[in-house]
Structure formats: structure tokens, C-alpha cells
Length: 462
Image 1 (spheres, rainbow, N blue to C red):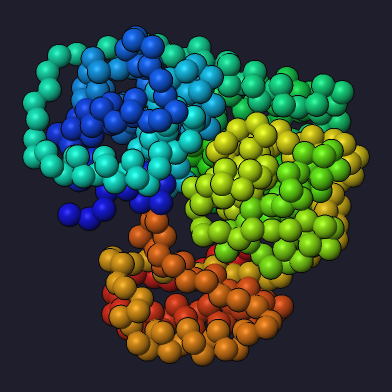
Image 2 (image 1 turned 90 degrees about the vertical axis):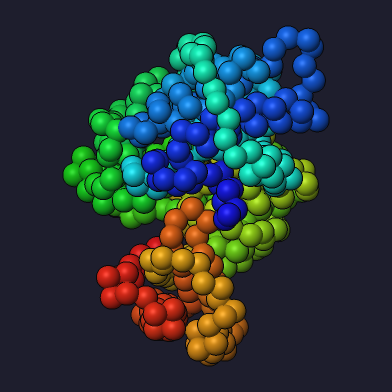
């Protein structure tokens, strides 16, 4: 049996293992058994409570029902409805819950869904706890569950989360001079985003706020920024912001229609926090996917960087272990640990808009000296994750291209933890050159892995 948890919870296609009713019920029962045991949670004799949220996928309510059947009377279940993933992260410690569950596949297409577990601190559960849950569920072949689960209505808690976000924005500022385009990806932020930013004074135009259960992330959101760029240009807006399906990441667009990724946002945030005295140890956590130019940019300004593996879990762990205050990924997962211990796209938007309002500059000019190296990402669709070390000709091509890039750029190759893709990232001084290198590596993999002609290679320029 394959490993149940990936880099961000459990992902799959509803109707296929592990997203089948019998397994989901067992998973709910095991999660209810283990979550209250976390060291940071100390029950006082009452039944521990668990918060549950989801995004807008049509499969969400069915998954919720089956998880709830498994949890049963072991915990008080509070159903927060459609709500951003980071809201559950915030609300769990705020409401002194034993843990949280979010039913979402984040940026994946609508046919996928996922399950993320949070401990009582609002952090994604540890690898150790994931392994305990995996071992426990694999030891149970089947179990019968009966009765109707009791889910308490927790929709009111979305207001607590919105108030928290609003409280972060400096009271001396407002966004009355800012015209803003929001793309909510037909996802979890579709209800909360507009009123939040309008309450801060912005003139808001929204995209991706008509979810139907099947259009989340489809042609919109953080991974499909074409509509955002078009709307910003057409409306002559000052800035555009696109969230992904569960709103734990944000990607920005300047007034010229150019996309600004997480590296840009981290640069803005680091300088602002340094100026305000909030940047602990004058250090920022980046991942191996961050642009080398960002490290150089921050270093020249007295800010050191700590590089970790890809995934917001690694960023969060590094922040916790080193007691740092800022970290993130180019994908738009940014952690402002002073406010919240996990990545939050809407919090990132609030902080970035505050920086824009303070600067009194166009968004394109707010970090004028930062010039990222051209970076290309090639995504190769795969049917299985063939060990890369078992492909000698592919490894030979990798060594050849690494030698060509030595001292002038870098490359990074890995399988995605959330999608059936091999990701090839190449970075260097000239766009055409790095694009050619990425395509050569992708072609070498495709030849040796003997992929079907239907499994096309998709490229994406950053």
C-alpha cells in the first residue's frame, strides 16, 4: 500500500481509494483518537472539540459526512462550512480546540480533493503523527459505523477570522486610494474576500466568486493568472491579487499587468519588517525554489537567508525551530509567524497592501532594485513516480546541464507531492538558455521513462 500522506495532507480523486466511504470513516475514527493526544492539548474533562472546514468542491460534503461518521461521539464536531484553510489554523487555538480538519485539494483541479489535519496549535500535524495515523488505519480492514453524526454549526466563526485579518492592518492607514482586483479562484475565499478589503477602504473588483462545485481553480486563481492580468489592465487597477482554491497562498499582479510571485512579496515583507523591528534575527526562511537573486538582494541589506526543502511544512518547521518571523515560497505560501503559524494568502494580501499604502508608490516600483534571474519550470505529466536514480541517461543529461550552469545558475528536479508531475526548475542569466536546458532535461526523462505521446510536456515561465 502506498504512503497515505503526501507533502500536504492526503490527496486523491473521490470515489477512488483512499477517498471511499469505508476508508474515510475509519480515518475519521483514528484521527479522533490521536488528535487529542497531542502534547500541546490538555483536556479539562470535557469532550474535546474539532473544527472542520472545506473549500467549494462538490465532493466536500460527502467526504465531511463520512469523516464525521467515523469521528462520532469521540469529539464535538464544529462544521465551519466553506472557509479558507488558514482560518481553521487560526480558529483551532483561538477556540481551544483539540485539532482541525480541512477538506480541500488546494490548487488542484476540481476532480481532486484532499484532507489536511491540524493540531491544537493550528499547525499541520507532525510527520510522526501522520505515521501513527497511517499505521493505525492500515491495521483496520473495515469497521461498521451507524447513527447520524451531530455537526454543530460553526459558520459564525468566519467573522472571527475576518476580524483577526482586519486587526492586522495598521489603524493609521486605509486603502481608499487603492483600486484592487481580487481573483478568488471560485474557492474558499469567495465570500470573505470582498467585504474584508472593502472594509479597509479599497475599491474592489472580484473574479472567481461564482463557485458551482466544479469550477474551483479552473481558468482562474493563483495558477491561472491570465484573467487577473487582463482585468487589472482593463480597469487600470493599482494591484491584483489571486488566491488559490483554499486561500493559503496569494500571487500578485502590478498595475502594468506583470505577475509578482512569492519571492517579490518576501522581499517587500522582509524590508518592511526590518524597518519596523519585527524581523527576528534579521533572517528569512526560503526554499530551494526561491530565486538566487532574492538571496543576493536581501544579503546586501543585512538580511540572511535559511534555505529549506520545498513545501510550506518545511518553512513552518524552520521558523519554529529557529524562532524566526518570516518565510515562504515563490508559489505564494508566505508565513508571517508574528500573526499566524501557517501560510495564509489573505493575511499576505493584507500585509502587502499595507506596504503598498505606506510606500505611496506604484506596486511595480515598490521593490525596484530587485531583479530576479529568469526562471523556467517544466512540468512533465507522469503516470508513476519512477525513481530518478534508476534512469542513467536522464542522470547523464542532468550532470551535463548542471556542469553548464555551474557558477551561473542552478537547476532543481523533483516529483510533485500533490500532483502527478515531475517538476524541472532551471534558473540562470538568460531566459532562452534556461528554457532550452529545461526542455532538454524534460525530453531526456520522457524518452527514458517511455512516456506515452499523450502525456504531453507542459512548460510554464515565471
